[in-house]
Picture 1 (cartoon, rainbow, N blue to C red):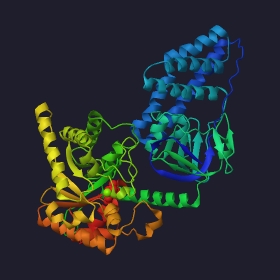
Picture 2: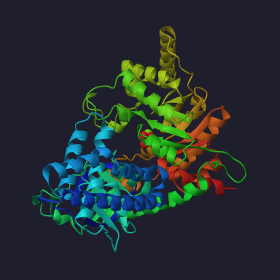
Picture 3: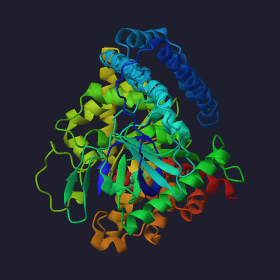
Picture 4: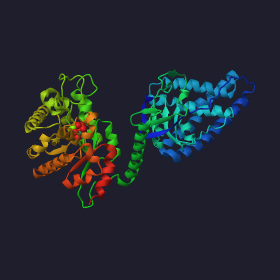
Length: 552
Ligand code: PEP
Ligand code: MG
């Protein structure tokens, strides 16, 4: 069973589910004759709560650092807030009731008031008010401090978690948090991030579907989940309950890789991607959308070597407008902070279908309308994209790359359109930069004429994913012929060498962005052949850097 939510702290976790149980204090209204004694009880409990929060603050300082621990400083201030104190005093005096009831009543009134406010940040603080004063009620009711301890790795499920609950928890064995409340700005979400514990919010935990498909719905977290094995995927925002062997194997590998990556980060972040004999390689990230930029930067990418812009077009009902595209490209360029961003114009077609664009049924879509062919057939769409890219180029370091090139004419035609666009933008007074222009080398035709193509462009990027399918006559999406899909085939290696030699002989830089670029055994060959740029998925960047730095 898979439940979807929103990942607030990335990472993966495997563990048994434990449903967080909060000792709920039932507050009863009692009449009290001695109001002064009740007020004194409240005062004592309030002071005791302050002492507790001071301790929590110190614990939080150790666990989550100064900035995040500040929440507890704010809680201590809240405990001294005269509005709350006077409200409790007034209720006790005017209604002759017990302190617990007066505090509960005060929390309700203030929380309701905060929830009505427009400001999201202040509204979210309603939970903090409840948390602090619930503790005062718990002290008045002489409840012990909740202190859960877990003996094995657990994924903690809760409808909500307050910051103080998170700090109080013994987190030695907590590997993940899954919260049904949908608030990624809550302090609990912020704390889970600083604790680096993979966490999801907004997951509907109130239903359970068993292996026979029987559904049971509950008003509380489905008790059937207790003790079940589960996986938290903080990247895709998924909670996988009762995963099968394959899932577990896959996620164990991912966790191993993450741990390794973290170690690499400590040693390799900020270091050059350079061989021992001094050959420098530009190490870039392949990104599919603007959200991948964060991962690219975290993993210390030196740029984005392949930005698959077609994802902007997929899953939509209509073509993204120039303004929409401009905003996204600009954001990516700015967020990459001056690092190179190679935007590949839309490589639509084959397995990357766009619903609103129909070219009729195709017998062999991979050999049909795709990439630059669609762009040149639909110049309006192509021009809209190029206008957006050029306009965004002013805000960063953008290069443009055309996909699925098979001829010189295609490159010349595409370049001619870029010229037209630049003239248009000049006439309209838009600022832009003269972006470098490159092409994907991903068809055997492009490899065979790479000496000629190199004279037309500033750079190549070899796409071995497609080059393998087109060279070996293997549909890359057909699992029946998967065993024939061998990107390490001698036919591919020879094409790599030929392309690099032809590029260099004609003053053209050459990179690679196909999956094999991250292969440990392949990297030394690429370097030996003379590759200039390597672009891999963000999680592979530091592995590649490590390997390159060990090459002679
Ligand atoms: C490739 O073909 O190698 C490539 C990087 O492009 P894509 O995987 O997007 O087709
Ligand atoms: Mg490709």
